[in-house]
Length: 377
Image 1 (cartoon, rainbow, N blue to C red):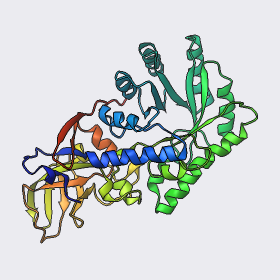
Image 2 (cartoon, one colour):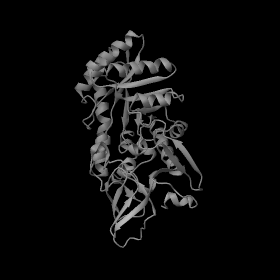
Image 3 (tube, one colour):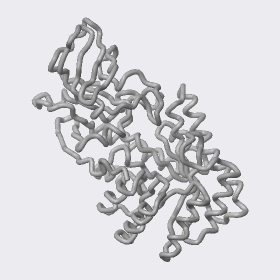
Image 4 (cartoon, rainbow, N blue to C red):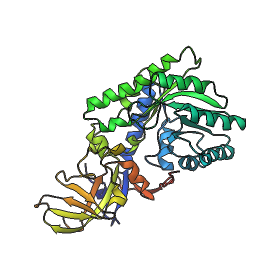
């Protein structure tokens, strides 16, 4: 694949710059929407990856039923632009957090805000304050399918929580939800598929345990871009929540999810020094590329990104504003050259920039604001 920056040969790039190839972005969005439609499941993409209005608008046009986000701050940004169905897939713990939730509900009465619960005590507290306001809050029971992060264990523990939440005035039970983030630590594509199968089945098995007690149809919601083509194809799953798929990244390439050509987001960087024949310095450091060597703290990658067309180059270390790259001593790379990097993890890279420069094959260029950047509360 030709480097994206070469499509605008008359442009003198000011680097580092995060760029997106519009054609590949559209292809990724269209493909996931087609998958959801073929499986008969709702697509509620996670916007933490792109944090932009333009990309969510593309997802909505392709059939997304709403969006998923991590924080109330992200939800507010998209509510202000008219989105009416949002899942905040994060525990809302603390008095101020719950107050902010109700403030949003008052400001945007036409919108549905969903959230998650993973223990009886927190669910009870949320139910009490919601009922006291005469409201009913739609919630999912979050199940830990293996990541060992937030979530109640599947089987009897999750079933007990489902039964309890179903009886709580103030809460409207939507179903069971999980995120198989541990797939990012998989050693092979076969293991990714196994995790995806288990992701769906642990929810479906739990749902069977409560059929006679909870006489409503429980939604079954799965996430994780690496596993979604497996878990989303399991009969009984009703919703998928992938996020990274709009861009993909070096992590997805390493897991065998996609080829590098499918990665729509790149970082353009300039060589600022070549102190030795086998070492160059670039102007993209940790404040541009982030320090991930794999999602969820996994360290499954070599270096801090893939340099397109330079398979033997390794981004060995990052300072805040410098990247140190090992190259073959006979490499023709020179000071001043612009290189193109597929980052290890596209999500934090987007959160570190104010804008995405979007390019197409004909040289058209747009600037899209990262409207939810920094909304971590």
